[in-house]
Image (cartoon, rainbow, N blue to C red):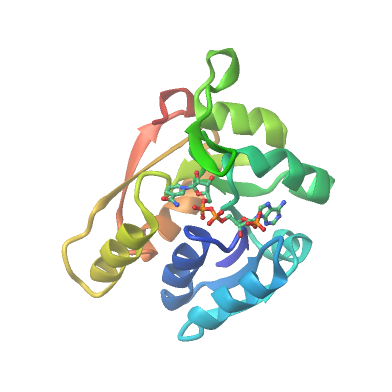
Length: 189
Ligand SMILES: NC(=O)c1ccc[n+]([C@@H]2O[C@H](COP(=O)([O-])OP(=O)(O)OC[C@H]3O[C@@H](n4cnc5c(N)ncnc54)[C@H](OP(=O)(O)O)[C@@H]3O)[C@@H](O)[C@H]2O)c1
C-alpha cells in the first residue's frame, strides 16, 4: 500500500520504517525536509522516500498524521482540501508543550482525543486512531519481533468508518502487531 507520513519525528520515523520493511511504499515528510530525508534513509532496507507534506498526502492511500497533537490545525492549513476523503491514521495523544515542558492538554467539549482531531481535520476525513499506545522505541522493538515471527503485541484501533478501519488493519498487522478493534472514536483511549 502507498503510505504517506506527515511528521518524521520520534514516532513517524520508526513507524514508517516498520511499514517500509514490510513492503509498503512509504513517503516520509516533515516540516524539516532534512528530517524526512533522514527517516527515509533509516528505512532504506524497505521502500521509502522523502519529500514535502503535500506530496506525502497526495502519495498516500493512507496518510499517517505523526505530528504533535496541537500541530493538526497547521497541517490542515497547509494541506487543505487535499485531506478530504483521505484515510488518515491519528496516533496523536493530547500532549502539548509550554515553555519547553510537556503538558497534558484538556480535550475540549467532552470529546475523546480522536473525536476532537476529526473535528479539526474535517468530517470528510476518514479517521482511524491507532499506534498511539506505545512509545516509539517499544513500537519498533515489538513490531520487529512480530515481523520476524515472534510473539505479537496487541495494537488497538478505533474509528467510525468501517471501510477505513478495514484498510488500516493490514498496516497494523504488517507492522508486526495483532490488530484489536476497540470500537468507535467515542470509545478510544
Ligand atoms: N513520542 C511518543 O512517545 C509518542 C507515543 C505515542 C503517540 N505519539 C504521538 O505521535 C505524534 C508525534 O509525536 P512525536 O513524539 O513523534 O513528535 P516529534 O518527535 O516532535 O515529531 C513530530 C514531527 O512533526 C513535525 N511537524 C510539526 N508540524 C508539522 C507540519 N505542519 N507539517 C509537517 N511536519 C510537522 C515536527 O517538526 P518540528 O519539530 O520542526 O515542529 C516533528 O519533526 C504526537 O501526536 C504524539 O502524541 C507519540
